[in-house]
Amino acid sequence: MSSDKMYDLIGVGVGPFNLSMAALLEDHPEVDALFFEQRSSFDWHPGMLIEGTKMQVPFIADLVTMANPKSHYSFLNYINEQGRMYPFYFLQRLDIPRREYNDYCQWVAKQINACQFSSRVDDVRYIEDNETYFELNVIDTETGDKSVYKTKHILLGTGSSPVMPDSFDRLPKEDVFHTAHFKDHLERCRTARSITVIGSGQSAAEAFRELLKEQREHKFRLDWITRSPGFASMEESKLSLEHFSPDYVDYFYNLPQSKKDEVFATQGLYYKGISTHTVTDIYDLLYEYSVGGEVLDVGLQVLTEVDGIHQKAEGEGYEIACTHHQEGTSFIHETEVVITATGYKPYVPAFINSLQDLIQWDDQGRYKVKADYRVEKTKEVKNEIYVHSGISHTHGVGSTNLGLAVHRNKMIINHLLDKEAYPIPDQNVFQNFKPQS
Ligand SMILES: Cc1cc2nc3c(=O)[nH]c(=O)nc-3n(C[C@H](O)[C@H](O)[C@H](O)COP(=O)(O)OP(=O)(O)OC[C@H]3O[C@@H](n4cnc5c(N)ncnc54)[C@H](O)[C@@H]3O)c2cc1C
Image 1: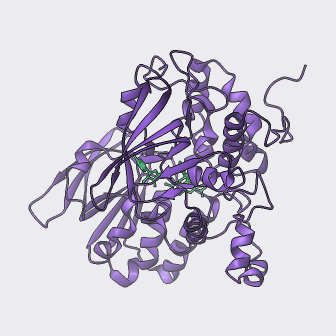
Image 2: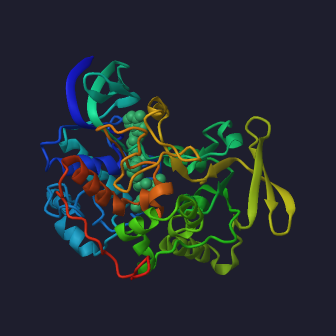
Image 3: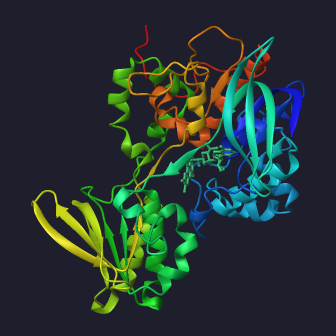
């Protein structure tokens, strides 16, 4: 199917970032927008929607409130429409369950016709004819049908993809998998004789905690290995959280690129560590289990680099080659199931290569991005590529944080409408990141 209709904006991917844009644009009907998502419905990191896990941002970082607290799509209105005002009031928490955030986003997505699911954007081309525009090839993931759409501007919201070491990726998926697929394999874990979690970020800790809760019932050996010197907590003090503010984004953006890369490399604990409450839960469980001198069939091993993995005979499990990097000793760790919590990387779809000549790239092959989230182009054209994804190198540590998505969308909408539809305050936090003149 082909249509001659020219959209103002087409968003690729419907995760929270583009869903926020779709919700905000309901207040701006003059922008004719469409959003494509390859999944059959909205689903937020489904493999990690573990019961008992909670959001790492307050519910105020919903899809709209930071731009328009009166929006129909606010989290509080969702709670109201679910008839849950009193339970939420008595809950007395800002950090809502992760499952509820997903349910809230699904509630929003179902109401917005501009979000089209089961639709994968396969290619984007820049057309310079009588008029200039982007042409998108879209595949219906259920029927395989192909369609072509035209738009003046595009918005990339394709999120991130799990990172798995190559040697692990080639092994049977039911035994060796990334935390992104944790829930899909929980049943398999319950039948295993031994399980090893590798990594020490929030996802590793959540998977370990969930397995620890079940360890005595299902009687598997449970190990947790990390190369870090400890199972460190995430930096969550209130003044540290100010690094996830528009002010810090602005400060970071204006540093030279080499300085940005240097600074970003030192900021792991702002987003890579473990939430204090998760560490506490784990410690409390270990303490409880060890009452009366019980010897736990559980191991926590720090300072240990995983060098490789070898599959033993069919059904016999795996040998993981490890090095204790301070002592310099090597050893083999045996296990039946391996869960890698080795993080995520920005997912920039391959089709962006079709726009190779239009985009300015830095010396590391990353696109250059303007302060207002437009990709820098090689020539003056009126069509824009706005980006939510793959911008940590330009906009810093808060780029994947839900608390900044609405701010970003406010700036993009202001640019799209060529007016200040949303004021952008200069000072939002108490501390100064640059010297005051
Ligand atoms: C387990 C987990 C928990 C997290 N918790 C928090 C938290 O509590 N607080 C916080 O601030 N951040 C959190 N994050 C960080 C994360 O960046 C955000 O949660 C959020 O998902 C980012 O939204 P997004 O819209 O960029 O991407 P995603 O949610 O990844 O969505 C991108 C979407 O694009 C779709 N897509 C990709 N390519 C195409 C294509 N070619 N065509 C059509 N569709 C496509 C994908 O199917 C996907 O649905 C968490 C991350 C993880 C992994």
